[in-house]
Figure 1 (cartoon, rainbow, N blue to C red):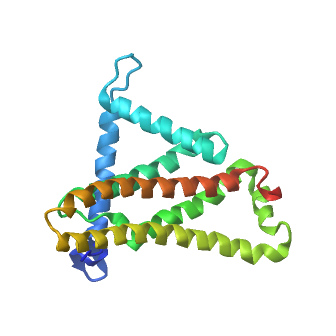
Figure 2: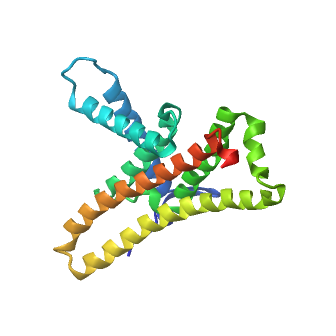
Length: 225
């Protein structure tokens, strides 16, 4: 049976608890930080590039194209935020093949934090692009009566982001545990392969939904659509 990383406590003192979610989140942040430094410390413009720089450029170009196609806007203003979301979630999910590892995305606290980040990023990008008054005005269109519904919509989609990612990661772990218990010598390889694929898909979906929400709020014609 799949155990949530929140349930695994490594250290606790009074109200302070360090569980697997925090530990593996810090590990991923450290891994990505060191990896980013190693890849970018010797960037080159020569035709012959290193394998890591090639991989980095493919990732950045692919993310830019997806943001451009999804939002129809300049992708550079969204790339750092959306790219960080995608890389963190993808890394968190892909490392699930490591024995003893528990993905932070299998914790509702992590997915809720990621969703809240998107929740606050929407008005930040929207206000930066349109100005505060023009952005806030769309909550009153086409009628001020719809203000509560706009607010409910913002909150509900944040909840949906968090629950969708959490539910998919948790269900994948539970299904894998059930199949492994049935046929332990056959299903592990298949489930690991499928886990890698679904982990990338979940990261992609979360990042694309973030682009949709942010791009919609930053669109200058948002209020009239």
